[in-house]
Length: 59
Image (cartoon, rainbow, N blue to C red; front, side):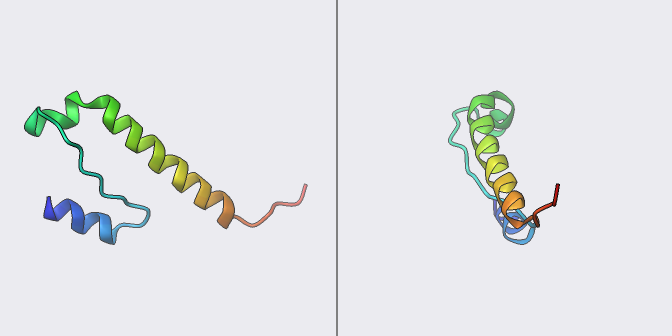
């Protein structure tokens, strides 16, 4: 867990999310709905940041 937290702190646009699961190490395989929810929220946040940071393109 400490390694993942370290990566999240030092990689651009990374976010650390801890998923509560009764499946132990296999939770990342079985808990698809939970992971998808967090991933979709992260992706929307990153896309919003990129859109607001992008200069306007003249048409």
